[in-house]
Length: 151
Image 1 (spheres, rainbow, N blue to C red):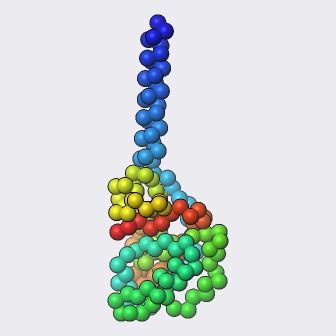
Image 2: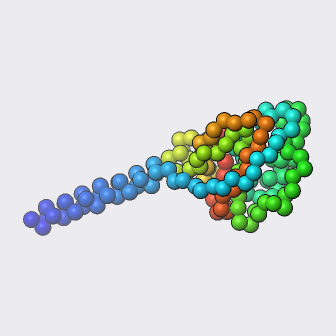
């Protein structure tokens, strides 16, 4: 009887372990975000990507001033960078799309991201199409563990 109980207990622990591992891998965790503002994009809005992760002021400056689209104009002009608090938040830029949902999981990283070998975890978004001449800015709490997914 002792041997039979031991086998039953080992089976239960094994099944529980498999369920916990599967939950960890496949469960999509939600990331809370906060809307910051919408900005008008001057000129042509043919941006090749929709989502840009900006964990620093330098990266934000790059996407807003140095990054050039087809007509060789900066994406945004005349913005007050003092309104962004990079010590508490990371910022997310979405061109022409509103953010509905932000999530991550190990399964999404390995199945949907071409750069799954990078250290940071990619954030995957659900978006709603909107005006293509707008830039939507959102923020999340700073964790130093997230990035944009690779195309």
